[in-house]
Image (cartoon, rainbow, N blue to C red):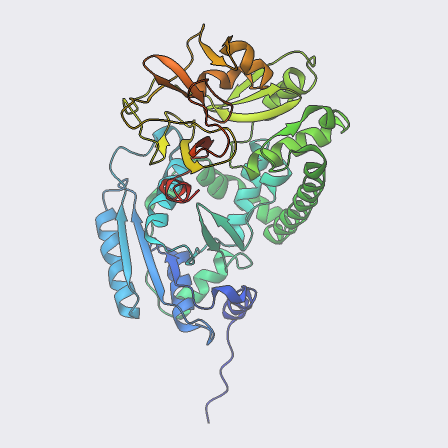
Length: 461
């Protein structure tokens, strides 16, 4: 009688990691990021052979050829053979030669790899990667050497969301030596990338030159560093919780702007913590430490009658009427738009100015427009006037009365007929074009434009 099957420690830790996943991933397809190296080879073998009964989705593999090494074509073929042997569908994507930047090859390759992977995955799918305990140590130390803060030194979590999809790392508690012993015990074959021995890249230098003597001097170093990462992750979560509480007190109703006078009541440290959180939650790049200090000085602590602007990484933070708002740095209004508009379909405005909307209604400020009249779109250049309630009024003064921030005034479209302004969407309709009483007319507004789906939704307004 054969002895009962006893799973190895690697198998036990892998199964425990799977059990920690939420129930919502039971029916998802699991995509293994399969480079063909030791780590991903063990991962694919484990997922195929230790597949839990509750996993209803399909196990798939994806291989990205970075077009760097001359043997990469053979590596892709090897991955195809291994996946076929398991009956696992494999998708191979190839990076266009010349796309990766040599100055920061590792980061550039990672961004392109995830971009290609994201193109293949469905929204509910799960990407499974083979990051292990040693990778966690390298990530923590690299962040420390680069001056990373608490969030950066928190390292990698076993579950996160990146690039629009869920990412799962079930091997984070297993070191590389254990993975190699597992691979040899199961007679697995894998690719050895010779570039991993080159120390020009920071991670390779850390892995090959610095960490071996550190591990020799401090036994259990990787477990200690992993514990440090977990403690940093807890601290990072606490800071985010504090920022969420502060945001309720400081932001406007939809969280898109911050109130400067409310920010003043926070300490300088809490101000910076809130700014980082607010920008990150709205998918803006987070400024460096020096940039945040400059942002505090120039924006939060400036005089109330000033309208300063802070630029970084292609974005601008504006202060106006005690509010901080963020907009793209390059947002020209000199783009192309149709010569005329018939009001019946939403009109996308240049840059990120949004979409111009019109709906037929009998209440509110409404435009009466005759089909035979040519309705055109233009923008402010200075000196414009509009006739309201029997008087020609300067648009500049009206914009001030409407409390339109100075940086937005040239982005508001003007509707004209025969070179005369007949409406300023969302603000006013000129004499002679304004509906009276319950007369049918067009209510004009400017909506956000995040994609084609927004236009389709806008048509139903």
